[in-house]
Image (cartoon, rainbow, N blue to C red; front, side):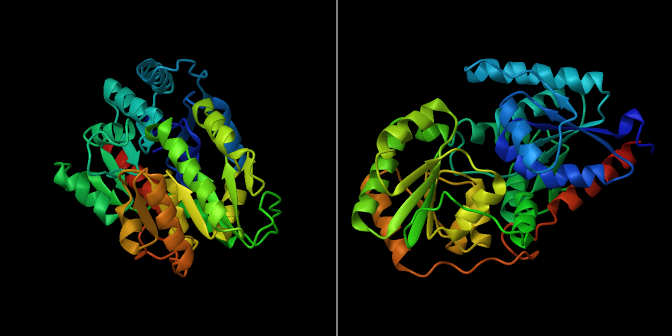
Length: 374
């Protein structure tokens, strides 16, 4: 199969920062595979953020769709679907790759189905105990699985989830989580790094909030808990990279900006963020990715959500799920601050999210699939 033949073209779709991080090693591995011609598409969901994030990782997008202007989830999804479908058709794509559970991921899946193209889904099989929480992520990932021809499950539990839903075994590949590929690179990077955002306190908490399910009152309750924790511990500071969404950022700033031991900073590049997380005594977050990264850094995580699609971290004792009640958040944070931090997971095949070699496995499976179809 020639790298220039139409049936070697793999369209990789990214629309958000987490997708960029989890697709980076996949894109590199695809580009290093002689039989493939990968095309990286910026879907337009968060156009500037995608460009910036890939640039930080020394990657570039081959194709860029216009920024999606609609604030409506349904209208944005329709526009993203149309955009991916148009590019896939124009580029004679042979296969579409989507990652995770975003609007871009679901739109790419629908576009692939529209065109009769095989879909490879990176980070397939993550599930919570509720079919609609978190919304819309849980709904999207459950709908993507039946469409995908190649389901790249990060863990044994994710693969089991897919099998229980009737996904055929030959469509499931347990490969580890691709963000661990990127994390391993950062941990092994010995270059010095300035961290001017760290507070001048013996200990600090890393705080990140962005989930739609926590908009409004949820953010209020978490911020109130953080302020109570600082009242109880005068040796602790907080660093919070503020999400660019105004619905999140304005509320966080209103609650936390006046406190002298809270540093509200712009979103951090991946390497300094991982350094922040590694130095933290505790992370308080509603993020999914941090639940995967923190166990490899030895940082305990308090997950301020009703449920999680990363039960592996909870089973390890590396993450604690806590409901959105200020007194419960404070109590669990105090407990975690009083006990030793968990041991770091090694970058090994037997570790919860793998050994940091997922991109290579994914690229090999895609190449084999297209070779078999040729």
